[in-house]
Length: 350
Image (cartoon, rainbow, N blue to C red):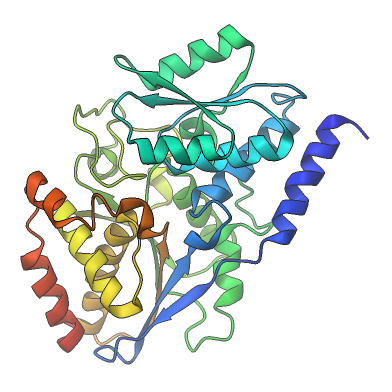
């Protein structure tokens, strides 16, 4: 058996050892005829939704002949994608380098190095350009998640996240969701879900939640692919300062812009509902989801809505769950926390 065949077999065996992620039903008595579910992606071996992306990117690189025995794998990422890719590189015995901004927290660097990855800090310039340069220098493979995320996953099925959601919803009172709500970092997950919905001819609509300091919402409105920002998103893992190639606007039915303070208030509300901490992008997803739930209630609709827990909150104890950090950043979550409490009582967001 060739090394590539053995590598693919190792990845498939790792997948078989991992049970599917849970679909959690969130009880909201204020809207008894509308059911909310959260797909809990924090239970992957590396703790986030990006585990799926990393698996797909490695398989894509192997099957395209880009990754071979001894290939150094390089990625431009300081977050969950780098952690997950480091995991799969170690599984295959490959060197892995994450190109990260110099400001990246030590906690994140430690997570990457835990799986045997190396961190290449960049003080100035683009991490994308440096990742490409480094790949040429060491004759390695630049994964380029922001380009290949939308095509590395088989959107027609084959155990992707969309197929998993619909399989888990089969026995529920409303098995075909009215909405699936997902925020975008690369855009790969929203592309997979949106394409799957159309391919399966489901009536489910896709809503993408976008945080502050991200161009995706404006791009969706204008289709101007040259949009850029200089300030990065405060919600780690989602939102981008440029229009990434993997973000496919045409498969999105609606986008909702979510204030960062609302995302962080939603995390506290979800902790109250589930007795657990989740990451910032989950808060962004949840606030957009609550808007849809409130609108459905106002129209007298029944049905189901599915969103995501993208990762756990343990990685963010020094930031999103730190009152001093929130104060230093100028985030006032109180108005949104009160708004969410009113929704919990009445089903009305406003």
